[in-house]
Length: 331
Image (cartoon, rainbow, N blue to C red; front, side, top):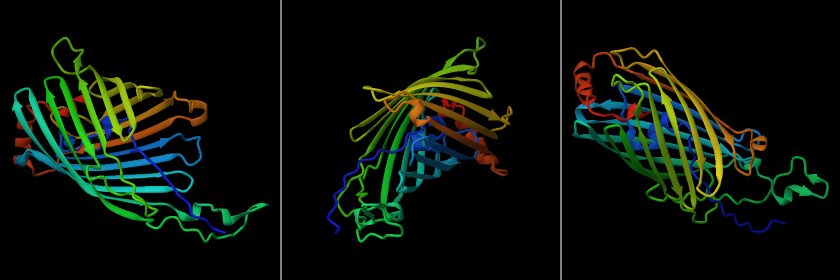
């Protein structure tokens, strides 16, 4: 016998500890804000590796500077799998950004993001009452139940952001899922809550001769989605070739994790914007789900920035624009 089943689920978007290595995910206004012509970002997060059905997340983005228009265009792809039923989400979106110089010390950027999200569950991984008897799971049994009327659902999703750099200070904000799409797989209405984010950083130079690096960069990143809050506070010690980071993350009421990170900037030469960045971080869980139970969370990131041959005029405009403050100096 199969009865009716009601399911209510609330989920939050993934949050990267290495937010500075996923700038377009952090804020669409950071799209196109880098030194080269084109940039590729890849980041992977494995959360709570000791827990069965842990969350794995991937983000890939590519952005391309359009100096003539004062902005950039980009593409971002987010993929996550979670739970023993392998709930899978794929988000593909285009990004457009535009920046204006307010004065010699200030730069204001805007970003828009639009795309689609596809959600699905591997129904073969689900187990129902008619697949179990007094002896346990019935080998090879199939269920007559079907609770996922809209499995493999696809829907439009949009976001926007703004960012200001003035002197050695940066502050930005973003909003995702501004259209609050219905993400229900069961046929019941389930609106995806908007995700609000704010981030701020300040660069404190340690060089007595007036150069920016080496520097200490304290930062704060806060998110709110439905009733869920997350706050990350910490700092980076940044040189021209290495970044060391220490962060605390919580929600104001309880601790979540202490994060350690190390970032290497390779093949970066004076007069060239070519750069390869490798980053790794680890979250030591400090919540009630303690570290010995979860195994913590690990992230790995790769960033590649390069120039495109033949873009001499565009590069001249870009270098002229780069005489103003840019947000990449904060990460």
